[in-house]
Length: 400
Image 1 (spheres, rainbow, N blue to C red):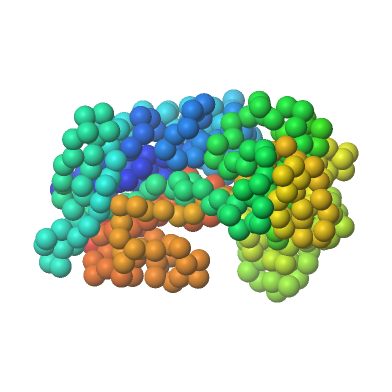
Image 2 (tube, rainbow, N blue to C red; image 1 turned 45 degrees about the vertical axis):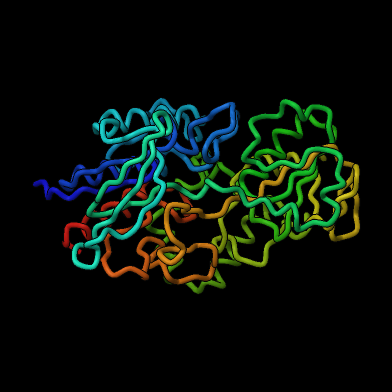
């Protein structure tokens, strides 16, 4: 039964699509604002620079299709377990069409501000100022609730200025957000800074086309292969009720040591200088089957953190130095909500506890503003955003 409540949803990537669908199921009236021309967010590959990040041309998912499907819309059985990014976008299109989502999205519409409505203290309503990028027209609308689903790949974390001599380096220093493929890097010596999934993928791809590729890491990373027991996807074999129950019963020190031993059985992390201080499940996992092979055959050389730059080389904190023609920073992204005041929500402080369950700002009187999908999940965001959206709509309707 429709409640008549108008809910603004900002962004139509994986999280925004789930939010629209759940709102429709719960009888709410969703209006989604998307500043780009299409759905998909990060997963919509584009050659040119766009608002927000994009996957690379060669990107394949590092979460299996069994773990990344929405609950009531499984990925097609003919899709590969670790599919190419183009199939992910096809899946989102099928999802949007199946549940009548597209008609609730206003494309080319940027949210300029989201602030308390005049009657907020009584109603919890929000006032959004939006702008159509085609007509340049601005307008203001009132909503009973807001779901922020812009993701966390909007603003690059690009700490190049922290390293001495960067301005003297003759080659290009770029961020992974601008990387599309290996073209332009052929026959160059490249240093990739950052050992997350992006850094590993870029280093592996470049290693097939460049004479020397170094992967620099500040704190190391635990490497998980994609393939688990009997050839099944690793996450499909690992993320089971049995394993979760087992980890909840056994001491954390025991399960950590057990998992570390298993991972070191494939690649000795300490020997290669990439063993982190944190346990394997205490940070976002690096999922790659290709990187260990490229390290062992010498195509990728592991290096510690960068210390400084010279005109044609990079010096690392262990004193070693390598000739370099180009540097790619794969150092992630920072949360950014330019349409919200910092007094409403501020993720700049990573130890901040002013957002309950990474969803509900504690600085507001009414629970009518929430964040959807702004977490770094061990698996994929799709089912998580779906569950968050269900919680949010029930709160909006006064059911929770």
